[in-house]
Image (cartoon, rainbow, N blue to C red):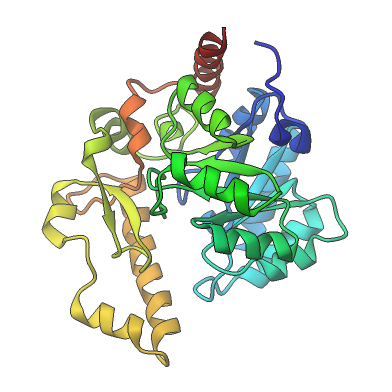
Length: 323
C-alpha cells in the first residue's frame, strides 16, 4: 500500500503512522530494525539496558542495520536514578525522538531544543497535555484506558477529542489497537497515528520466553487486569494464577510508604525495583510466579509472526476500511 499521510509520518519521515510502543524487557534492537524496515518506527525503553555501554551498543547496532527512524523511552520521575546519564546519551546520539513517561518532561525538552530529536510525552488527561505543550513538546501520546502497561483512565473516543480541544500539537493514540480498522478509527477520532505494543510481543524478533509469547496468543482482552504491585502506578498484566494469588493491590505497608511524604520517593523506587525484577523473571523464563505485562489488544493476536507481517496485515486492513 502507498504511504499513509499524517502529521506523524511527515514529522518522522516514516511510511505508516505507527509507533511500535516501548515495552519494558521486550523491545530490543531486532524489533526496532524490523519496524524501520517495515515502514514504521519503534522505540525502546532506556531501562532495558543495564549499563550505558549496553545502551550505546544497541543504538550503534540499530544505526548500522538501518537508516530508519527509532526512538527511546525515558522514565522521567525520581524512581529512575539513571535518567541524567540516559538523557545525555540520547542527546549525543540525537535519537529521532524521545517518549517521556511518568513525570515532568521539562529537562528532556530543554536538552533537545537545539537538536533534531523530537519529544513526545505520555499523557492521560487534557490539563497535563496542555502543560507539556507549553513546555515545548512536539506531540502528546494519548494513553487511553485500553493501553498496555501504565494505562490511562479514559477511553480513546473520549480522550482524543478532549485533547484536540485543549492542545494544538499532534496527538498519537496509545492503547487498544490490534487491527487496521482500529488504526482507522483512531485517525478518524483525530489522532495522527498510534503507539501499539502488545501485539508485537508475539513476534519472531521479540527475545522473550516462548511461554510469554504463547500467553499473548492464548489469553484475550477479558484476561487483562490492573495491578499497582509492579511500579506503584497502575499497570496492566495478564491475569495468571500467580497474579490471582498475590492480588492486584499494594499491601498496607506498601500503601503507607507510598503515602508518606518523606519516604514516598524511596518506597516508589523499591516498589519499582521489586516489580521490574518480577517482570524480568517472567519475561525470560516461565515460572509459576509469572507477571506478564500486556494490554487488551492481545485479543487480536492468533499466532507468532515476524514484525513485517503484522505491519503488512494492519496496513492491508486499513486500506480495506478506506476503500
